Length: 352
Image 1 (cartoon, rainbow, N blue to C red):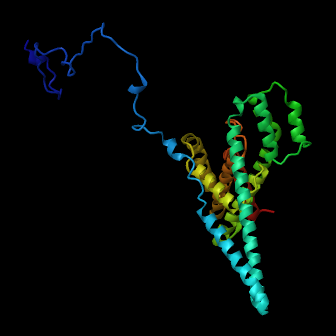
Image 2 (cartoon, helix red, strand yellow):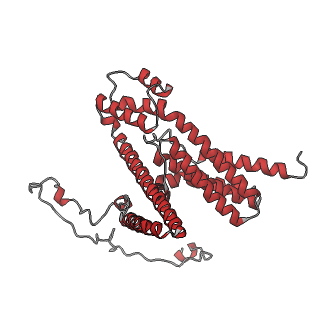
Image 3 (cartoon, rainbow, N blue to C red):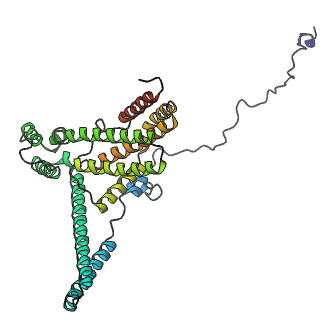
């Protein structure tokens, strides 16, 4: 029988012919390399490693900014000195001439110069205290590596920074829990528990209360410009109160310096923290979608204030938080939403 009779004419595929001389596999495009097993070898040395300038560390560019320039302070001090000299030299002449109006203006100018000098001295003292706080915070980062004597010295410095006297209950509880053989690694949790934990709880209540009040204020206020001024004022007041909890008193220059550091920390948040907050940001969008427009704006402002407060707390706390104990924005998010939700429920016509 002919082979064509066994072919299925309904098969649309064309016929193919194969040659027996077709190679079983394609040749390898890469040539083979053979190495002598007896060839001498050497270990990798540091000079063989890639240069750091080819792969720079991005964290190296996120260091502290340049130190504060003292040029403006010198100009202000010089202006006050020249003004004081001018008023002092002109005062006897005006008294001799009987020009009481000029004498009054010169006395007023001397008073203004004196107040300006006191303000500069106060700012210098507060900046010095902020620098001492930063040095103590830097020293406490090495507390686990300190000997018992050095660790106890740092603990006394922390007591002084927090304005605790020797008979304070928190300090006495710390001394009762401390043993003579405790080194820095043993004293770190004791300091965090007895000296800093009460202030941490007060700071959390302060952040929750002030951010919640700010959110409610924005939600009920119809004036946008007034809201902006009140929000800025309340945020600065929250920063001042948090600093006082941890033994800091801010002046104008110290407040600007601290606020700059806080904003820089917020801007350069770690990738891990941003990734962990991504799901919670979606939750915020979902919660905001259930609120009215003004309440959603209040939620956003409240979350911004809470984030600013948490960053300030982390930056001003003398002893850094452990990863497990560090306060997070997720703890305050639900509280803000519940406050705004209760506010909207009260405004409904059917609510009693």
